[in-house]
Length: 171
Figure 1 (spheres, rainbow, N blue to C red):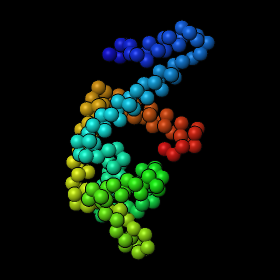
Figure 2 (figure 1 turned 180 degrees about the vertical axis):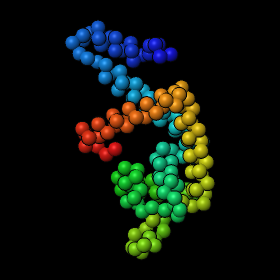
Figure 3 (figure 1 turned 60 degrees about the vertical axis):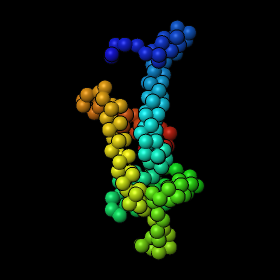
């Protein structure tokens, strides 16, 4: 399979034929990353839907779950970890609260603000969803052995760091 060609190889061949003055090798990497992103997002969404979730609701619930007991964070902490705006977070929290998956409680530390906490139902749901999500990730990466996974992970980390530094984006 390593020597097989794909649609992106054919696109690159066309560009090389039409514009031999351009080095289009990077177009292959970017194209494959883009294609992988589309496939991976669709496959993750399929798993989330099995639990009546979407990517946004999964993100909030998973962030609360991995925070550890008492599975509660302030809205600003959730915004920091999920990298969305406060308006977007409010909308997500409203929907999750309406579904009975989270509650908003007075912040025990200062009494002024509030924290967002998983309900028992939210805890059970996200635990089941995370289990299926991890199994799905294993399935999606099954074509690579352990050494290849480690190498890919390291290269992606390095590339993400370089692009983040270059663009001023958060890692």
